[in-house]
Image (cartoon, rainbow, N blue to C red; front, top):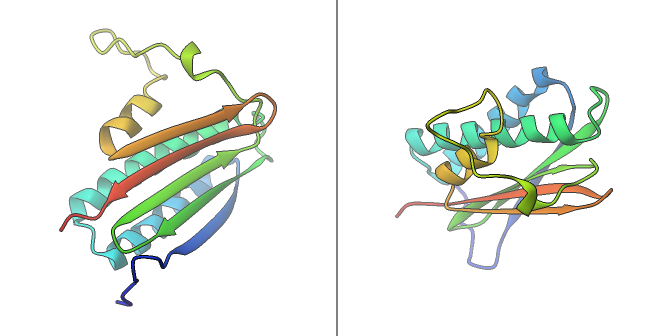
Length: 142
């Protein structure tokens, strides 16, 4: 494995069609990158679930068309993996999303909750008519 210095970062970008069949490409790419970085099998499985949820959100809210593309960026440095899932949708207000009722769960609406549970840090940036970026950060365990 190449050793990255503190200031080095490597970025891998995928542009995927808004078709559920291609989420596996994002998961496989992530698995390869995370394995190379030294993440445990359990951490890689958590990362794959989080990326799947973020990709599902991008497909659902990124204009709502199967032909619409979204991007997944993997930013690797020596201490953490940053994953940005970006869509070109209409955006939304974060404060308009209610916390899920875990005692009476619905079929949908748990994606961001699951992502936040599995990742060390999560940021969501969304602007009206400019899309949404879900940034997920997982630190490499010592």
